[in-house]
Length: 431
Image (cartoon, rainbow, N blue to C red; front, side):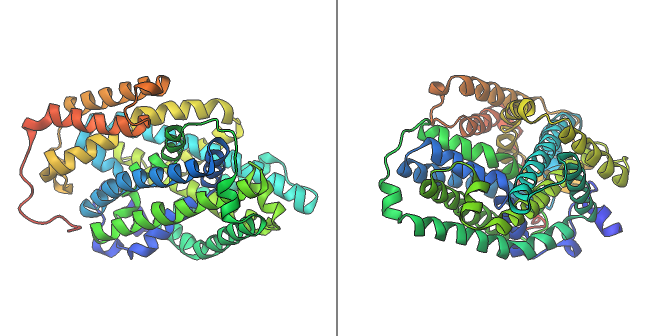
């Protein structure tokens, strides 16, 4: 039990907790096999032409890969969670604000994913077996299982992910194969269809769906021995698995004309595969959401009991799901995402170019209480992101989230350039 408790403490991961990078990549890959990723691929294809979809998927995945590689590499080299990194960048008190924003957002996604899980399982059970437990029962069971997996710690999440990735990969391959059997790739690419999105909006949808996971990637890459391992985790997760899952969903949507992933799977005779994706994908995704939430709260309030914290947050997330806040809460989460996406810009710029010497666990004892320059850059990025969200024409790249991260990073460099400190004389844990 002490090993599990150590994962949630404000310490750097020791050598005894290190995990082969390919097993950590299995956790990142499981997130890509979850229902939201399939739905994102469907929605992007529904709004774009086939070739526009290809470009949106490629560019969106490359952008997430770049951000995830930076954040994941920092996590591997420092062996600290995203919330400890935020504490160094924003100060002890300042990080409390950032961490609570992360925690609220992740708990919101915890509740929303339980809603999606209950709706999907109910629909599949009714179609396949002629009946289903109530959504209330399904939600309570899901919340208990997901909380239990979080309670077991990263190793348990990692074990389930490692076991299930090959199964989910096979289901996705079958989905793509059935789609291409129904219509050939040249036919699908030549299809003419009305578009409701621009390529930039399609890229933004892909980035927006994954960006929070990329920012908190240090929570799992801190278990990897080096930055090369973190790069492998990021590449497998975003450039192979995520890209393949969204492409398979897009092919299936094009071949069937449907925008419902569960309906498509049932049409292809993949009812059992749909169950596996919904149950295991949602289970691992929500366990990671709760795991990262616990890390954020524990980093902000280290004296809180880990056991009570996990149970309490699990109950809170389940309560959000039972209130069925899906329609109202999604818009709230979008705003939260826009507001704290620029946090990555501050952390990346601070670590790489400004204060790398401070990114050591020992520095937390003398950590600054508040970092006004970091908050100033965050404010610039957040306000710019909100403006570009409402006025997309003002976005230089057409992708407001990426513009905001870049603007935040440049703003922080301008504000904190005189604070530069030399790199540490000895290598960090992950070098």
